[in-house]
Image (cartoon, rainbow, N blue to C red; front, top):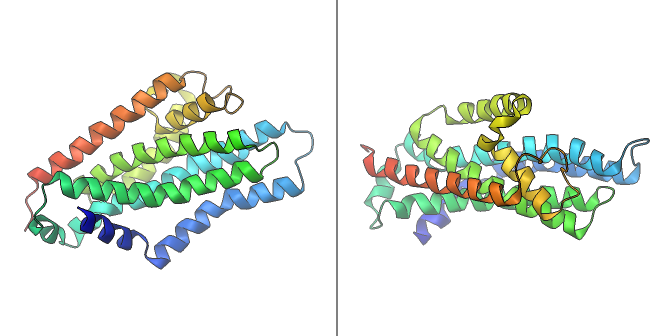
Length: 240
């Protein structure tokens, strides 16, 4: 399993892909620097941080885009390149293939996404250690949930990346935004509720439907369910 994990990390840390992801993650950090130098006039700084920097940029864009790109490629590229056979030949159980792949994707995505969120909240006006710690905790929850879903999706279809972006920008951004009752099915709102649960100043209005005691079990169920589905899919796949 350790060998599969190391190989997965090396695949995900290809310079060109990593550079693109770092550029995406750097956008909210750059804007937070601008906001720190020239704070927006006539606007509550906490609301600006949550409603401009964290909500639409870090949580709604950086988190899902980076995680979906890495997770769908984790096993999806093995299927497309027909290299799954080599993994099957290794003397490890099928779950020993799935778990290192999920772990590698979550680690790389976590470092980039959490780093972006922590820097954004630390640099932005009204930043604090508690704010950054809350952002780190919430984003880590989001990374794990998204990674499990889209690692499985990468095994199920060659169009997993496109489907992932549709989920993020149609379901999460549009439908859930208007129909608050379905926030129970939204990774974005698990993330916001976790951040709010650690630091109740952040997302005081947006996270009202879910609390920390609801968001964490919901995210854990998603992670466990889709990890199990990934293992099941690997066990049942016909690999040439």
